Every structure is written in C-alpha cells, then in structure tokens.
Length: 470
Image (cartoon, rainbow, N blue to C red; front, side):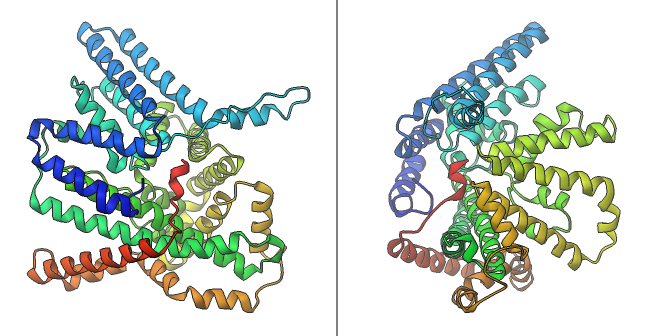
C-alpha cells in the first residue's frame, strides 16, 4: 500500500483517522500500532513478523541499557547496545546484502554458492536504523527508556514514515509518543502538507518518470547526447519529487496524528556546493550517519587525513545503504571523492564564485551522480554516461528528442520551478501567514490538487515509488 493510491486515500486513511480520534487518548498509540502493522502487512504479510521481532529486540535492549545504567555498569550497557546493533545489522545483511556478496564470491573459481533469493522487506533500511538509534540514544543518555511496549512498537511501526522515512530518531519524538497534543490547526497543516506531497508525487514525479522510463528503455547506442541529458534531467526531477513528495506526505500525516517530524529536504537543487547539497538532501539519513558513524569515527577532530578517511567510510556505507549493487557503491565513492576534493581544494574557490555559477556546477555534478545511481547494470550505465558526454550514441540530437522535449515541456517546467523555493517565497510575500485570504486559497488549493490527483490515479496505471527498493 502506498500513500499515492486510491486504496490508501479513500479507505485506509479515513478509517484510521476515525478510529484514532474516537478512541480515548490512552488507547491512541495502540490504534496507531495496530493500524501500522496492518498497513505493513498489506504489502508484506510475512515480514510483519520481522518488524515485530526488531521491535522486541530493541525494546529489550533499551530496558537492559536502563537497568545497567542504574547499576552503574558501563560494560553491561555496551553489551546491550552491541547485541542490538549486531541483531539489527545481521537482519539487514541477510535480507538485503547476502545475495550481493554471494554473487561477488561466486566470481572466485571453483566456488558456486546458491543465492538465498529472499524478498527484500519494504522499508527495512529505514526502520532498522530507527530502532538502532533508540538503543544508542538511551545509552548516551539522550533519551529515556520506553517501558511501554505498545508505545515503542507504535514508534517503530508508525505507518506515516515506516516505508521510506524520514528516519525519525527516538529522541526527537520521545515526548510526543507519550504526550502529544492534536489540534485543529495542526491537522489543517497536515492536510495541506500531505496534499502538497501527493501533488509532487502524482502530478510531477510520475509524469517526468514516464519520460525517463521511455528514454531508459531505448537502446543506449540509439540515444543522442541531448536525449541522454534529457533523460538524466527527468530522473533528477523524478527522484526529488518522488522522495520529497513522500516525505511531505509523511510529515503531513504525522501532523494529522499530532506529531512534528523534522524536515527531510530543504530545496537541495538550490545548493552552491556538493557539501551544501548533502546538508539539504535526505537530511534524516545524513544526520543518522553523522551522529552514529562519522562522529564516533572521530569526525574532523583527528586531522585532515583521518577526516577524509572517515568521509570515505561514511560514503561507502551510504552507497551500500541505498542498495546491494555495484552502481550504488560507485555512486557513494563518487560523492565521497567529491566531498573530499571540495573540503581540501575547491571550498575557497566555490565561495568566491557567483551564486548562479556555483549552482550550475552543483546541478551538473548531481545530475551526473543520479545517472550513475539510476543504472543497476554498470555496463549500460557506463555507455549512458559516455553518450551524455558525446563519446557514444547516435549524435547530438534528432527530431525525436525535440518531440519529447515539446511533449513534456510543461511538466519539465513545473518540475524545474517546483524544485526551487521561488513559489514558496512568492506565496509568503503575496499571502502572509494568518490572513483569511491565505486560508481560503489554501483550502481551494487542497481540494483542487486532491481532485486532480484522484483523477490521475483513476486513469493511470503508472505509479512507481523509487525508494521502496531501499
């Protein structure tokens, strides 16, 4: 079940909202827990046991950390954290990475290990990191032990952000899990934010995704350079509106149930460097790796060489986190090298560049990066990159390229403008917060976009979600 589906919009969400708000406050976490498990079981009926197991493991680990903290035993606390990390990472490895490493080992002569062929549990990368952060935060003293399993289970399985984030660290919602306040104003904000995200997904991501799909299915040697760049731009827009749209919907749903999740995107395509881009893109993932990998490794406190090594480690892991394929590792190494180069050589130069030039530099680098990311087959991906830079393919351009550009011109323009803060800045200037006119137009916007999205969903079968595979 996905947020941008009629099943979710007209059945699941209304029923859960009604059950939630008619329930006494003390039972609302139970409603969220059960409905979240049902939401997950709809797509993964077998693997709902996996998320329950992960919840039990980290609930017990958190209680153990709290117990040994009272006894003053650092060793006991470390053992509890180690058990939590080992079990969670083992589950992640078996279900997500085992076949990848088996395929690498099988390249060795005389070795032939059969793959496990296990289906990838949806959202395992997100909820695994989330549950691990709880135990670590309790150990660090940054969060209190949660003694109510239903409340903890609701945190782990919370359907608004279960499938694809944002990764919600326990310390940021600990108080909200026990004593949040649902208000009409927060609910209205949630509905508006959800519809914005739905519009991003259905009206922009799906449409530019269709363009990317058309180009990606063309034989690489038949593509022109301009077609390859058009496809790369389409994928760059698709992945942003797909994932930021989902994050908007998750944040909006959270508000409907009284939660305030942290932002996950901050107009990353306006960045003036790769360093800035990764502060603005998938903020919750970047924060997780910074807090639980980069800083524990020493961060930038042990000299430049160690800092660069730490960046390299973090980005190899970031690439692997996105998927069990060589293309994701290469993509991680690509960004790791770029960040090291920026921090060691380019930073002062980039700071002196005009903002417009710095943004173009960043967009070109990011677009090339998404081209690496988008091709699981590295041979096809390499050919595609060669075509982008005029080293292969069917020339610079042709009439079909012009036709595709003309056919998708409106959605491409919507995507380019929508990926910047221009619309937000204009609306804030023309319609200040708190004015009646803004409230009326917001309501009209919600009904209009929701109606158009519903019409698209009824008439279209193309409704992919890229981050489900992570």
